[in-house]
Image 1 (tube, rainbow, N blue to C red):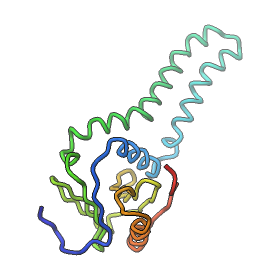
Image 2 (cartoon, helix red, strand yellow; image 1 turned 90 degrees about the horizontal axis):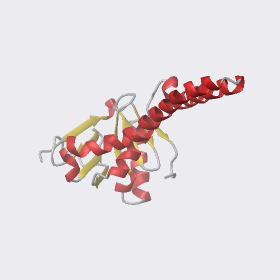
Image 3 (cartoon, rainbow, N blue to C red; image 1 turned 135 degrees about the horizontal axis):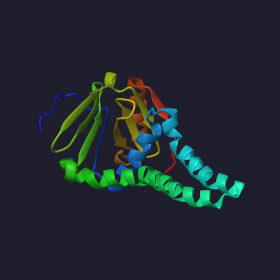
Length: 185
């Protein structure tokens, strides 16, 4: 594969795509993306609305109201389960059909130029001025290029704690890095 630069990477890692890891990645991106407050708390708000729609008629003794509102509470609960749990599962399920790279190793390298991700079918370079911020989680280094879109480097692909520390130091020189839930799984 043709390489756009001959620069030696400061950090380099290779890994195979993993469905369970991809689900964790989608959740990590959602957790650390810049989302509106109402969206972040939509689950709590919908569960509260569902509970109130059932509890208020019960407290007033209006059992017809309970019977009428109970199906709506179930619909809200199902909707939340769909978007919180099933959406990542469906995204992971469809990913191999849409991306031929899953059958070959991914190679991620951090250079002074930027974050380069390659596989047998693509070569993507995100320059450091295109990385708005980076986040280190227990499983990933996330490189956000917009409020909701991130490239990633799995920590498992790095060769031990020294390589993780080297990656952290290198990223700090090029982009704002936040540490979040580091060490947790």
